[in-house]
Length: 123
Image 1 (cartoon, helix red, strand yellow):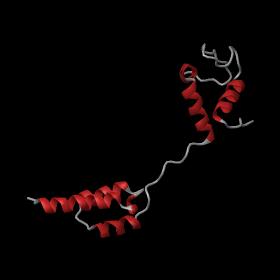
Image 2 (tube, helix red, strand yellow):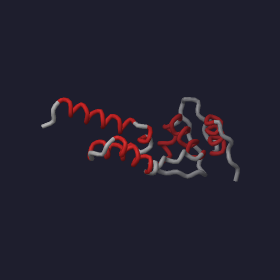
Image 3 (cartoon, one colour):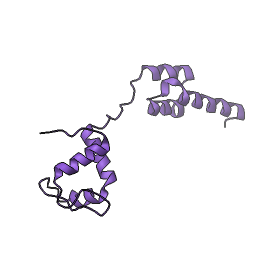
């Protein structure tokens, strides 16, 4: 059984490992060292500093960002076309001011680009 003082010291060790500068970007390893081992704070910091940072997700590409922005703003159009997507077709607009009936994809893409603040790519 752990007395109160030892428990407080152990909690302080865990907090120190999890909150140290070296733990940033290596949270999973910091949790392992703090909770599953009995290494000292100094040893944990040394191990964390030597470890590689966790891989970060790549930022979305402009096209992915554009499609996500348009899909978020016009889900009724995107959902209606997801199962039978054919870029040669024209969309029927919803009543919320989307492109007029029969508008070609180029106009829809141009509007989405304008909303997302990016230039449409030609060709």
